[in-house]
Image (cartoon, rainbow, N blue to C red; front, side):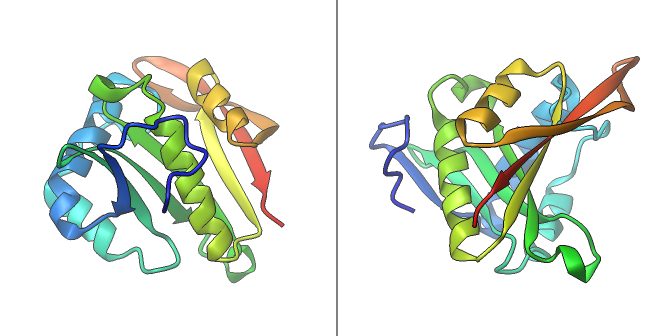
Length: 174
């Protein structure tokens, strides 16, 4: 996890594997997205214990990487199992979350570069991202990381009193 080629050149930023001790910061970052954005379709905040369980259940094949700045976790990226069906084992869903106080600094792109590198090392064949259609910034982030739109699911989620479309994006790794 070298950060080579990353847009965020801040030497204070360290990208590393998440630890159980990071659960509180991961909950803070994720819950901000839950409460204030359509980046996730969760509508209830997650507890620190939930995030600990989420981390503990992941295994080596589905890592979580964190961006740490001056000793504080300010963002994270993850690979998640796309489906419980074994035929999908070489596909993973990506997720990237950066705390609002640190957006626009290139951390999302750096985290994406690093998690894609991890996916390559883990020999995944394809990565999938589900992005709310109204999130132009998230679509641009995925496109910059080499994802392409492969479809749109219309009005599949309801949050903040309105129906939302989801854009499916995919990056082939082989």
